[in-house]
Image 1 (cartoon, helix red, strand yellow):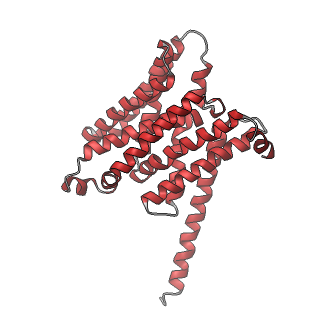
Image 2: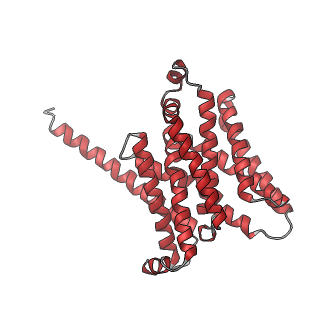
Image 3: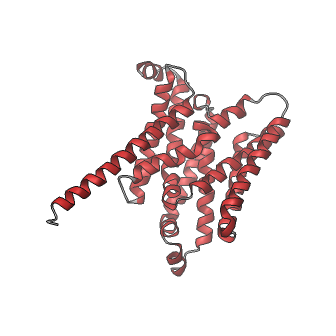
Length: 284
């Protein structure tokens, strides 16, 4: 751990990696909270894994994989949202089919691309240590879009997440804001690809917000805590993986997963103790 902190003051690539982790954490906090509260992790997973089609096509045709990922993510978000709204009876099956189709198309493009693309492998499994400066600018732009959308439409998202029927009665265009939320999830998925890779992106999207949900009920407080936890997990994963030369993405997810398990056990124990205390002092 001490080796990491001494290297951090000298190595610019480590400083860039920490900054990339912080930028990704903002997306985790803002949008991951909606995913956890709305309980649409499976939908977010479908969006995330459909992204491989866009990345594979972008590499095959010589474009930036992140641009291909963003286009594919938004298209899959709209398709999955349309399925959720109009084909609810077959929602799980159709989303699972899109999930598989997206990955299959991506793998075909990868197979057809001449040579071995190490860059694409880093997008699949994450390589936060090799984030270029221009991608940091792209991540900052995506964060700005997310933050602006949440600030402008916070009340509408709140209504859609907690009570869609009441929101409709109040005249809120529920379908529009639901599809917008899925598009923001798509943007967040692209934001996280550099940090933990496409394979593990759902874990980092949901675990910080899930931990925050153990302790607070306010959506805005969950966002703040989840963002801070995301910063802790990404920087902590970097520090723990540096000396033994381990892959950073999996270490970040292991750290977040362990924190979630401990938090779930601790919060469950706290609830039981509090309930027993209440019973003892209630006179019953």
